[in-house]
Image (cartoon, rainbow, N blue to C red):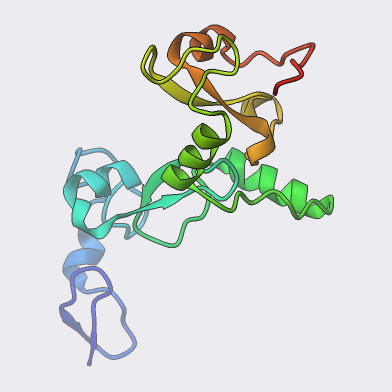
Length: 170
């Protein structure tokens, strides 16, 4: 005897799914939408909503952003996975940010003396964020040399614009 890969019930030797699971409609128990094959949920979002205890927080190896995963995912999106693959294929081995998440944020803030590099305001005067000088959406890397401290207003004002002339202090 073996067990059903979906519900764990005993099944005949050589089978991997019981008859009840085989005949069950492919509907997500969380949202009621359609799901693929024998997956338990239709998406990772539904799986997280139903079972948050099974997920853990990791940092993307390309951009350093934190995201939740139940598996061994290393990238927050397909774009980051492709960008890392292309860069490695081109021979760039300096892509993966050594400090990640909060450690990376702290390292950037400390390097920039807790000041916005665009307007000079400090943490006491404005909410500080980490900004990609060359936006990731336009091909910018996730390394420390492309990250700077920016206040909320400057970061929103710059958006995903590539600076034509890069200031000397960046």
